[in-house]
Image (cartoon, rainbow, N blue to C red):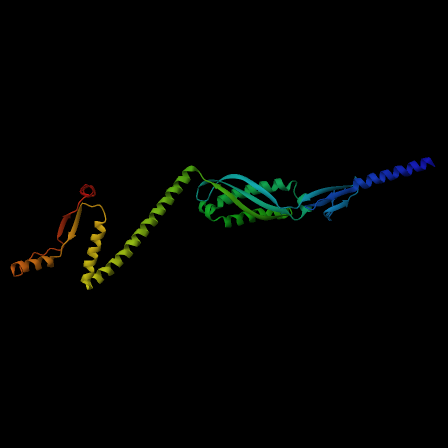
Length: 280
């Protein structure tokens, strides 16, 4: 009777140990792939508590989160023969854990190598201007290149982005000189356009002053006021020829022919700033 109790107790203990050994916990971010006697089972083990057959089954957990994989910087030559160094980042996740475990030995290592080779390939197909200013089509092309082998491994590429493009120092100096030349060209074009518009306005103003002679005199007085505001020692004052003829006619009683002079100039000395202070 005692032997039978011992046997029953031993069986209970063994059953408890076997039950404990068969229990597994799968996290929310994981999926379980079961190998039974070396054969993969099509049914995945969902998050939570699950059980397997001890010794017979082997459970392998696969993370289904989005993986952020930085691609090391790769040296390459662009299509326009410029040496660059480009790095990128790849975002992907496992959508078929069975294929990710069975089809490839280490899908993380495989994705890293495929990303590096694809990045070097896309560098050779692109031009420098596209790498610097038009990266969206390059990112899409790199994503297509990665998606082809990844789909066979049960992996979905979320997106691919080029992080940085490193240029040689000589190329940076050349681009700086090019940018300066472009800014100089724009400056000259803007200046020339401003002069053209100013000439049109001046022509219109000259036509208006020709119709109204008094406007020319007002403009002359305004110019004198502007010049007198500065600390100048000499003021050049245009004097009308008609005024000279009038004074001559008044003094002699008859008008005498005065040589045609367009703009006679009369220099009126003005006191300097230091002289004004001395007089004060």
